[in-house]
Length: 305
Ligand code: PSU
Ligand code: MN
Image (cartoon, rainbow, N blue to C red; front, side, top):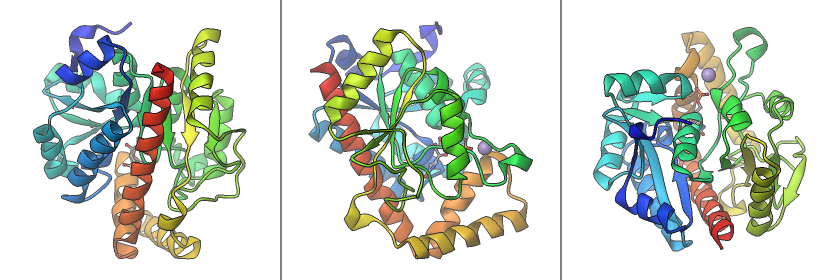
């Protein structure tokens, strides 16, 4: 069990958890590294509003002054958005050092899961998870998000994974690690900007309550680990597969030529894709996050109902 002295809950999140109200965790790398300013801040604040409209309390997570925070002020969200990539992108391996040095960090899916689990938050909404990168058989670039899903008891709602990743290998990795993957209203892994990828998901649920039941069963059976819900982008916001496919290929090629590596890879590709699609990918990205926050909030309400 982690030392709770490092954890800082906002008064609202603390009260909600104490009284058994539904709480949904939200990440902050998506704010600092995933979107440009000011859309990043507007999106983060809208996510919190959507969460409340669906009956749950939002807990946006980050590391501020070395504290593992669940629940941020609007000022803190604005700060992360303005600082952008100047803030450390914080995944599992970064938490001890950021904490010891009293630094700030924007948390990835992996790091947000750690904070959520410490706080006792069982559900978390984001856009996309990290996964097995294309070419990982040479680079070994596999996101720590996948390992975290294997061991930390938080259910993550996302819109699938982008084809900047190797979707087939990402699914294989999740299977090896024993992570339950559930398509919400679909039998197919959505590819983030589009609703289809051609890869099957092992499980399907059509209602938030079914997912809540699965989360409870997972806990009651007594095994560790998280769960992944893949929620397709709403039809009206999904992109043309060819347009987005081309942009992704071009972005990957440029990253290769510039020698972009490691943790810079995902933010570089996202920014490049946004430029190549004239902002259309950003608009889709924002809408799919909203859609995931609404679903996660409904699952949270069902868990606490
Ligand atoms: N995918 C997105 N937007 C994002 C990320 C992924 O569409 O902002 C972020 C998430 O925070 C995710 C992280 O946890 O990138 C994965 O980074 P890496 O592959 O370096 O582990
Ligand atoms: Mn990586």
